[in-house]
Amino acid sequence: MKRHLKHPIRGLLSLLFLAPIAAAFGQDTSKLIPNPRILFSSTVRKADGGTTTYQHIEPPTAEQLAALAAARLAANPAPSTAPVLPRLQLTARVYEGSLTELKWSHQGVECTAWSSVDFRLLEAIPQFEQDGITRRLSSITITHRQPPAGVVSARPWPQFPAEVLAAVPQGLRAWYILTEFGGTAAMEAEACAALDALHRYVEVHWEALQARRTEREAQKAAEAAYKLAHPEPPPAPTNTIIQFWKEERP
Image (cartoon, rainbow, N blue to C red; front, side, top):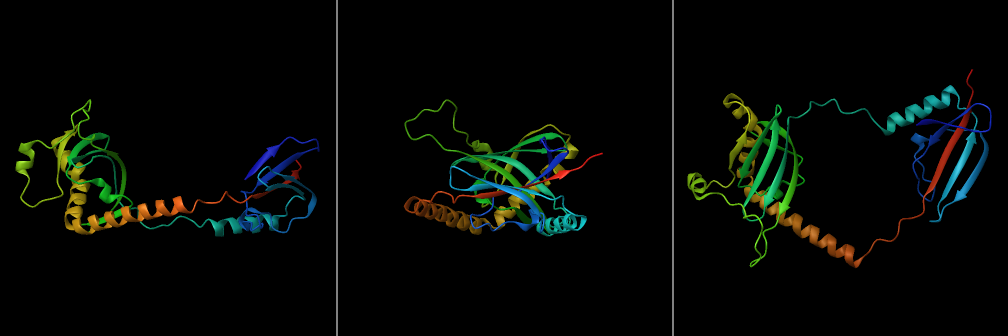
């Protein structure tokens, strides 16, 4: 990254900043001018024991700049050209032990639904495949915990109405009802297609998702206990290199 800095020396100094590197100077060569001629160097020691080294180098040659560009390209390959999967992006408010409120947008139309699925089952699942279509899942999950017994909440705890529960087919576990939709009737099926597929996916994989969540919760508890018993040491001091050179301008 090039920036310009005012300097008493005539001309401009171009700066090439490096991210902090390990104490052993295991530097990322994709961010360094390769084989520079250092005119002078100055090192400042930081409070954490690390250092910042300023290197005034000769202006890099065309070959050095080309090598730098090639190293950066190798370290940051071009993005994949694989086809982009359709995405279901929504916000899920999980009311523990009750239901989940879902909100999403379709062609600028806001949609709201109440779902029987605890969307914590779907945490850390980046995509799902159902009915021959793979979709990306981008869900922001917020958990609301029911107040303890004897505590009166300012708002009543949401529950599915009895008439809704009576209409659910026997044995179906993953289902939802659309409560708000500002579009036309013709748009409704398209707006709900991805959510329909997601609920069918959960129904098919219900036991596996439940087992996965139990395993994840146990793993989180074990990791928390381990971190409590083995606190991490403070981070090692870092050593930063800043290269700069004089750039003549007409």
